[in-house]
Length: 269
Length: 269
Image (cartoon, rainbow over the protein chains, first blue to last red):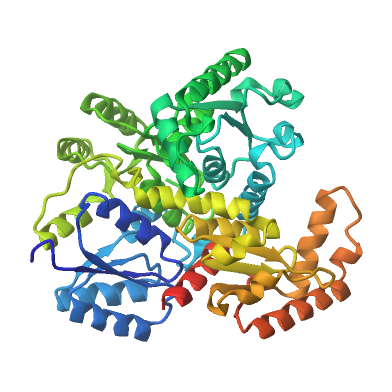
């Protein structure tokens, strides 16, 4: 089989299939030119349905990824894949078995247990709502309540970063910095350990802002995207960060997931 | 070891460690009472650092989860865990090897490849910004641009659901429904296949709204949380959904991940 041929991937789950999808995309990133066809089968809960899907998988010579927790279904899949020479990856049960051994307890075998509507879930939902409510400096009251406060000049990815951290159960508010705008008093009342100042490279910011101008149907060369203006904004922001004595992260070439991991690591470290 | 004793989990990654954390939490959900201690080691990129962490893992008798893609580091971990009887789960290389075989190509072995700043990444960032910008009916222009439009009465989880779908690269706008408020004209111009109407059970909504009143420091029994009022709102919303001929989802006892999976499945199915 060469790279032009499509590889079929079947993701089967008794719940959403998020774990398997995550593992698949991490592996896929190692093959930038792979031609693939991904089929998702979420909320599969009975044996007959599993069999119908596996028959199709044989037909397509698919790689099967699954995260079932019902031992009857897991065994059925194992046997079926063995008998039909299907490549099958059970992404969760080896770890579940080790945990059962270590704790000397039995797993609940309850499907969708990761999506339980417990306190942790509702805290995460509240954190997401908090991040949207206190995005973009909308209401300075948020700074006093937040676990993390993100400062940054325009186009340093404050909004998506706030949302990503909220999804990890942190209450996050952000404030755009501009030399012409005032810093709300609340910022100076907050423990500087909670504050993160984002910065970026002049060149990169200029390119991002030019793109933004083009997407608005305007000429790319505006004061907003000029390097002089950006240098002035970066200098201003760095002066504020110094005054606040907060953590500074240069986000150039970093994804929001990477920036978030740095923030969480330094909060918990 | 009994359930009271702590199980140590070490997550090692050359990048953020998100994939391993995801698998761990899916397995953990099967053991609601497990007492554990989770240590994250993101951005580990050299062999000596790996060895220092593995020595600590032996000391703690930890379960090691990793997603390294550098074959030298992977082999080092395998050998070390074998020699020191450490339980080690390589969550990604078995699948990478199968993909390499199928495509007859070599993986790039580039760490953090999942967090590449490519078009897909920037589309996702735009989608997250779109969701925040067009949350809560803030600007009806968003409905004409959106891939998915979420309608629902208060406390049916429109905001977090919009954000979760945005993180899957969909442009999402939402509109709160109230019998007293007008529906923007734009909603009627949109293909009904893009519209999802959320509903919930009377009892559940009343409880959620009472909780909300308490969190605001008010008496729980307000018109907002009364069943009469909620019944009226649900009836109104269902009438609108019927008129629009859109998909209806009752979110009672569903997490946002589950509701999102239903929406994506019906969009793509």
